[in-house]
Length: 388
Image (cartoon, rainbow, N blue to C red; front, side, top):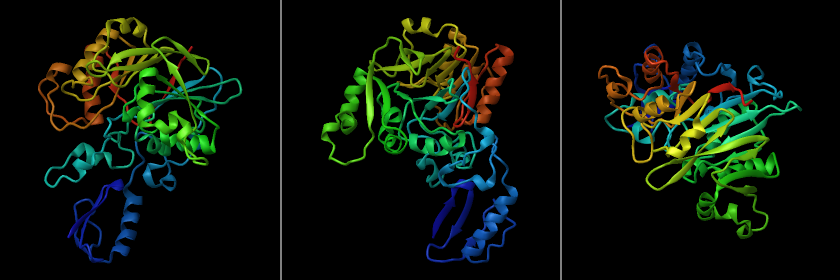
């Protein structure tokens, strides 16, 4: 006997591995007729899903526009022209290196992780891929200039889902915060862009990260080793330091931070938007670069404590209180099974999961008690920004 899970719509069936007959109904669909062949059952399930499934809260989408891998067909109602003076930010990913849901949770023989199983449902905000954002800037020709920050292991999956939906096509620049796989592991996938959309992709990274990429992605850095006719990503690497530089006419200020002992990573400030996705400590010299921050996007791996390489929510909130941005959006979250938020959020001891809605309910109380506007972000979140 095997357990077959149709996780995309959270339908669970238990079937004989060599049979076409449903063995046991599960509670999700008690009204279905389970004594029928699998083929008929599939028809019933589709009809039931069509009747019961509500539009996800994070995006409004027609059921006829749902595809495999979470792909969302382009919706004209969500496409905006790149009018000069208009800018927007889109979260492509808000999770850890492993992403959410985790295979280890979905296959656990005795424990069920409610956050990971919730994340298998289409539109659930606990679904988190590698941290990454897109900044889009309107131009006088009504064309968007698009800046991608980080292209990690799940970048292509994120692009499949969100690029068609928001009408994103060209990439004018790629900024790397660091060279770990969850930030740079998707550089090879840029071949789809440089083979079919644009001639090259401009990638900005520090010299220390370029040295790492010369080993992990040697064929992208040193194209002389490529076999003639091989269609790999055509990337143009531009070394950056910790000094400001310009991309698409915008001033980009690196925000040096520690991502573990002795490991330097970068955040980036564009206008009054500050993005720090991987951080365990902020050097004193970086704080002045964060002054007058309108929106702070900050690493918050766990809701209970920090790790050697990432802020937990308590430390992240301390930084928010120190930096005092007008708005904070946390990113880089994983799933955690039991936590105590009494210290970090000044509430009575509570047991919660790292669930998007539950944590945001607690964070909302901080706006009342302290005036802190802070919440968890989510994959696909789109916000209008002012880059001056």
